[in-house]
Image (cartoon, rainbow, N blue to C red):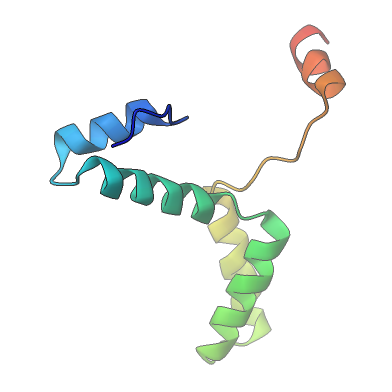
Length: 91
């Protein structure tokens, strides 16, 4: 692995220590997982709707399923301004 700092270096180190992944492979896995879970909720809903439609499900089956999936899925946080961050901390 290069000597450049990685924002998830601790996770990459953990993966290389606890699996057969090398540092480069672990970094790619982390990047893939972060990309998957950084999908905004609107994109997730549209993507899942299209996927389930292609499997032959109808909207009456699709929308309750998506609603249940969203409850357990991490979705991208909205972009917050510095002012909004300060308000979260200081009220």
